[in-house]
Picture 1 (cartoon, one colour):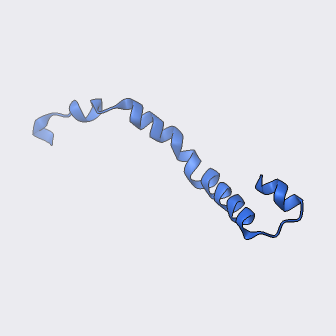
Picture 2 (cartoon, rainbow, N blue to C red; picture 1 turned 180 degrees about the vertical axis):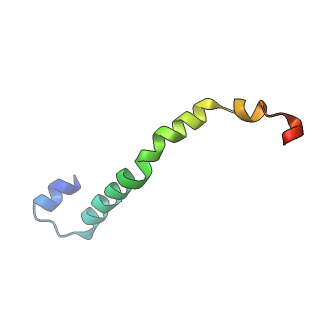
Picture 3 (cartoon, helix red, strand yellow; picture 1 turned 120 degrees about the horizontal axis):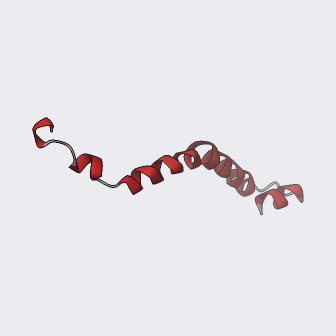
Length: 55
């Protein structure tokens, strides 16, 4: 939507901000999702398997 509005000649800063936000998200936050999913799916098994004497 933002790209179409800008291509149509809109100078509304709202659309520019939307594109900047999307670029930031895909450059910085999106790459972390795979790691976060693996961590979430692993559960607490590694923590619970830790010897109490080592904690």
